[in-house]
Length: 163
Image (cartoon, rainbow, N blue to C red; front, side, top):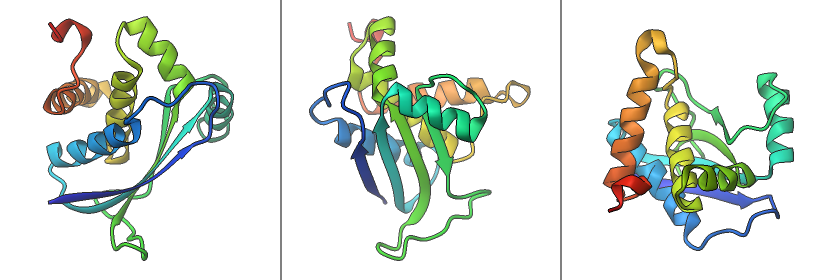
């Protein structure tokens, strides 16, 4: 059984927070852990930021001076994780999502903001678990297949699949 302890902060004021977004994010993290074969108690931090904040963090930590939708900071490596002394859960890492960028992408892709944030939370959790976009190893294809399966498991479908 999987339990997810989630620290959640909304550090942006640009986009109104959709109802139930925190629950959706927690569900995405939990389902990603389940679908990738993890079990037990996990601790994750999720912070919603605006474009200015994520651009600054992207430059500081990744050397890219541009807005991005999500940044992941893993706490473990090679299936070894520190334990949070407060709850005994393995510390997965930190997820920062630009709600402003997610909102723009939801409009561009023609689906809801909740669906876009669910995708980003799932994508970011996969990165926290060590998955990459490395095409030499088929990483992009693996991540895409996992993301689709996880979101489908949660009944969070793409607009064309909603009919």
